[in-house]
Length: 437
Image 1 (cartoon, helix red, strand yellow):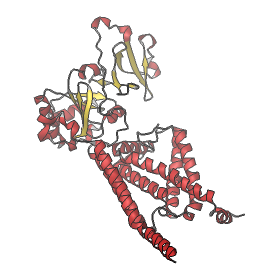
Image 2 (cartoon, rainbow, N blue to C red):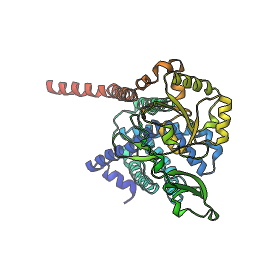
Image 3 (tube, rainbow, N blue to C red):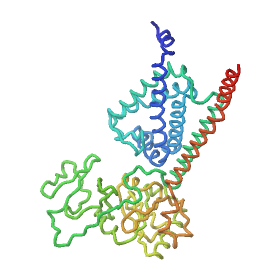
Image 4 (cartoon, rainbow, N blue to C red):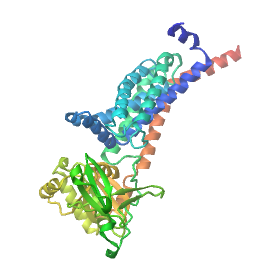
């Protein structure tokens, strides 16, 4: 029996129709989730695509990373919706197949080489190993191949005349989510530093507690860092290079989640490589963090707003510090051209980007707890002196997300009513006519 004959033989079976609907929901749901988690955090998708381009030696394409981040999010979300509701029953599975024929070999390459540790398929919402991601893509491929044969045999939720409206609403929704995520902050924060997190646990120790044996030394070789005690220092002739040290009995910056179940270390370093996390972030002070993930690309035009923000903070007795992974020369150059009077310290690139999105980004700590965080461009420096604390209420991410989601679902429902109401009327009229007969 040929494949075509088999399809014709079983397409009318109840189990086949049910399996088709379940496959639509499953495959479409994965695409929807993948597209949404990328769209809600376009900065994170931008960073991940940049990692991909660098790993492939395509640094010259870095200028397209932001466009690709938003475009991929929109395409995945719209394709997922089309699959889930049975829109474009013939073309949607083919588009999904083409997407997976690109992504599946890519994830296999990642699994074999480890060029990028995390594929970023679901943003920061769900982390999977590269091999698990490859396995997930194989299963998706099997589901898509099934839909290639049977998707057209089951009617979709929406009729062909209004399917473009469904796609337009889906595009508008994911673009609105991405807009807020890029220009202010992600509407849903999947990262380890949500608002309400105590950024550091500053437990001081006395000088008498310190001793050379209590230091942990960090050395680097082949781009990888490793910690050593004083009794196990590596030989620099073996390629090890000294990076920094910190006191083992003095806690480094600790991220303490509100749940109390997770702790991860952060480190703020001065220009000599010393860990000064506890010194610059104290629970008893309110602090404004200025984050510069890519300091050389921060335009001088931003210096005026940053200096205004610094002046406003001084009026309200708030400390201001800058954090960046930039080199000492780059920091010095920025301070010269921007006339910045606030200190700037060094911080790991990946941790910095996790705290807040934007370049630059602004984070306000109230008694050591993250009160709010925004991109610099979303702040009105004129209101800074009186509204530093109140800015926590100026961006209601939960309210905005709820409004956008309800508007999107209401739009889909309105299209459904517009599209299918004639069938209800026809059914009622036919039933009434039959009864009268």
